[in-house]
Image 1 (cartoon, rainbow, N blue to C red):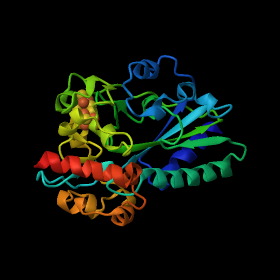
Image 2: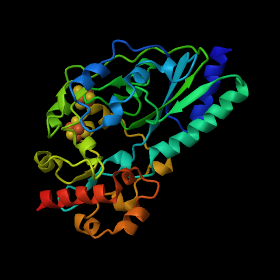
Image 3: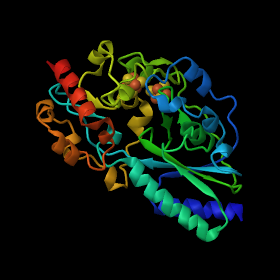
Image 4: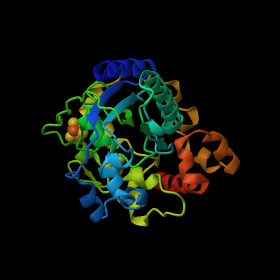
Length: 310
Ligand code: SF4
Ligand code: SF4
């Protein structure tokens, strides 16, 4: 039954346009580096990462009887290059379309309904960044990809342009083999990071990372000494992923139209953004992850980018 159920889950996930499906055993992660990363303060202002480390390190605390973790990847790549003009801002690829949380939660719920039709007693918990789940570790263990030295998961099929989501389930499904590291001696991402946030392979100091800094809300100020390195980046940062050779090879376009860029987030002119009022922000960021910074946080980023472009 479990092999059959796994095959069914893979088929249904593919029908919902998930790119990959892998299964890992739900077990504690005592060797994971989360605690030492937190103790060193490398999570910076991402205080949510410091909450509930026990839950993150043991999925059985998230779902009683958890036996397997189904990991799904969703390719969000599309062909659209940033303009190099410093008078224009840059939004990370993942954030130019609809909020992936909303898109993926809806799909996961449908998938769970279908699983329940086959296994009515199954208990599940879904996660898309929404639960304290160490998704990269589960993606590695389930064979979706390996952890690149930039700390993103790299899929051999889609590079690192993927969203991850999980279904924790109390059924024992056949587990996949973990993916081996394929970075080799490459260190292009470490050399490309403009702030030294990749303090060593696989370890990000969030206090220096532009991606983390630009996603702070207005009441979490960006240290002045970090602002110049942000350049014209408005939300997120793709630099370490752009230089990765695996992303040069992986250019399959996404099947999900909701992930495609909105025109106003594709190399927007900074002076245009500076004129946005609250209503414009609300309208332009409807169902967008950028709304998370709030209007004041977004305008702070616009002002920093304008200062850096002058
Ligand atoms: S996202 Fe940008 S700032 Fe953060 S580690 Fe990558 S290159 Fe560095
Ligand atoms: S740039 Fe090189 S070292 Fe960095 S993640 Fe890609 S393959 Fe690995």
